[in-house]
Image 1 (tube, helix red, strand yellow):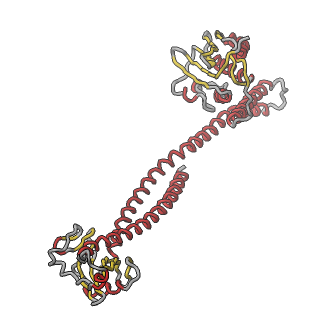
Image 2: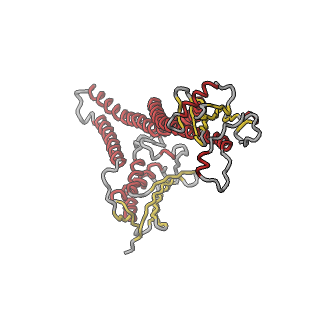
Image 3: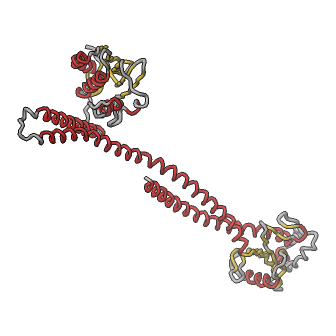
Length: 443
């Protein structure tokens, strides 16, 4: 079982890990694309205040288009650190106009193609010559957004009014944000693995429980069969040994040993027949063709057959049977249920006691009750009496039964669509109750 549970957990964890890895990789790719697109939008937003500064004054309403076209490109703005008229933007840091996003800087610059001049608008401690060279290279690119591999920078540019506005971010800007997002995903991944491991352990215990019960039942079955077969086999071997010691005696003289061996052999055959019958019932074989059976007639017949047995045991046998109670069953099974319950009650009722059988119809159900007043089943034994080879009276040395009668009776009742239950107390004795769905036919 430990090996099974270990393999179960390993299989679950491998399967879950594969699914989580696929989800992790997918989310990582989606995160990368999302952060990449966010970077483009951020850089666009960074250039908006700069574009507002570079917007030329409007022409009078009577100005012509040719006059606008002949206008010279506007001059580059004054040093942004001293330009008090620059529109303020909440994304910038006070007087230095330095953009800060999660502690990472984005550098902005202006490029004038006519004068080939570059002015860095924001960004402290930057390589001015390197930025200027990068800006000129970006101005020659075809795409407005992308990565400048030679400088290891991401850029976004806007060309307007004869100037090119450029925003630049180091590759570490995007890497840091992606690493932060993927780190959160990795933590979630590990937490999910831990949760699924705990769930797998719990499920392995639950999945192994039926197998453990089945193995325990198998071990108990082997032990019970071995015990029940050991006694008659021992008797037969002992009888044979006794007869072998007196080879010259006649059969009549050895008759007691022969009869003892014969009884032991019949006892084994009865047990084997019951085992085969129970196995067939548990497998649902043979197929039972249920019909409407007169349970009243079956009960009356069983009472008449066992009156002599009750008389020999000194037990009073009472009956109260409603007429024309029909149930879905077979004639054989209906008779077997009534007879088995009465035989079992008479078997354990002491001399001078009373056994009663009652058949009644309650609403749409037929209820058969067999009660023996003088004996009871221990509360510890009561939940197990329908288990194979279980004998509640084993402590009293009872050897007549094999503990298979009640399990067979339960299976027969269930095949007929009924239920069987047992109760026992000092006040009421032992009561077996069988219920069927029924219909009452009157003649």
